[in-house]
Image 1: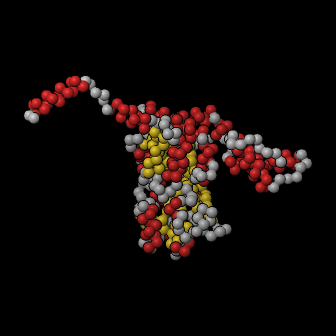
Image 2: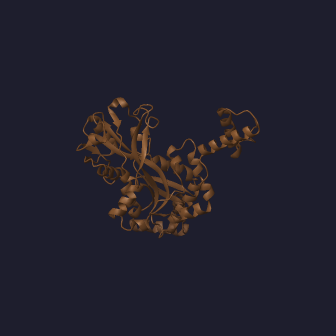
Image 3: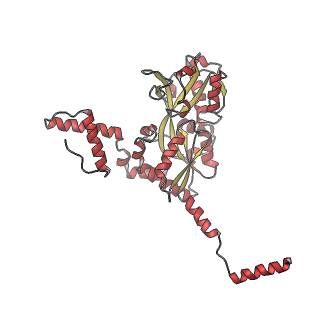
Length: 377
């Protein structure tokens, strides 16, 4: 068949068939549905805990239809701030509070104190300093190689500040934490620094007989505005720290920060919806099965010098009683005290701790509608 004849036949068939539905229409609807309510949350690397925190948030918020959190693994707090400002699609990020101050002082992101807001302060992250056995104290690191993670990471900024404050000069290396740990084992570096919420996944598999140990980090009162005294214990790292011992260190706060989305109404609304679900369901993050660092979070805590994201501020003003609700352990203690007072005033015999715990569990099941009235004793 000649080319001209073939084209005529095709055109004639198309004319008879009439206009066909565009295949793009249902596809566009599907794409729109998939992207509905999505917010992207940038974290630090998987060696820390922010990825796990983001996973907890994603599981809380995702309803399968109208809301979804997509975690994005970033390169550290400073890069996360730059990404919040310039990278397409990044709506929120978990960053260290001292990195926020550093970025403002150094004008890393011009106008950041105006454009960037925060939803809430999160948990504290501890400064871990893991060293070889021959390094016995902080000052022994003078003029030795210490890895501080990749350039621009929160660890690199915190470590630089702390070594300067404590007047201990070191030779900095900038390998990823996993590579640095291997170099530390081989003796190529003297120590590695890592800012991460305890227990950090990077250190979980280590043992004391590996020839590595955590160093005490002296607390400098001059740093009290940015850092707080903290401790690593055997409960955090049972294979590295002996029972009944502790390693003093410092901790820095972390923040859930928001991009400036005033020119993007849809993304702004998506984050407002995220805030509503996150704050309303916050108490569930304190239950077993979620990262224990959630117990350090106080939704009402403020970050001096920075503005809270307006929908978050409005939610707190409307729901201050919910935001200040006691955490499960506090509620359990209050319940036990109530039982003791009630039995004492009624002249009854005191309950054992196990009896009070059983009664509290019955009360909790009744409160959530999982069973009938709690049984009296």
